[in-house]
Length: 158
Image (tube, rainbow, N blue to C red; front, side, top):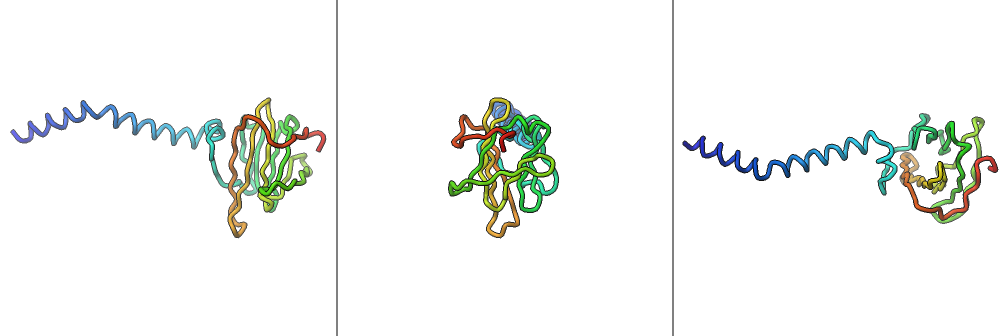
């Protein structure tokens, strides 16, 4: 008798609250999976942070561009780099020199904590580099922005 009542109570509670619990679990799971696998979701988030890839290129946007760290350089490059307009500053507002490496990729000194704005395919993006106090760990925040705060220079003019 007690088992039958417990079964009925559990069935009733599952019927009443089960959908809500299931939906919350599925939404949380889908959100986590999308953030880990879908770069567009990653870019559109307001504070998406990840480690700067050391000596390995990490594709961004449509995989026509990549970012990486090479010793003290933060590199923005790729097959479509010539379609980019860019400018950069330090976190205190000072201008940063933008150089090109032997492959034509854009280089920024990573220890200056660069804030980079660029346009690509008629959209504006920013990349902010954050270092820890000891310079051992580098993170970046990549955002889609509505408009730039810096005057952008065409890649071919750098």
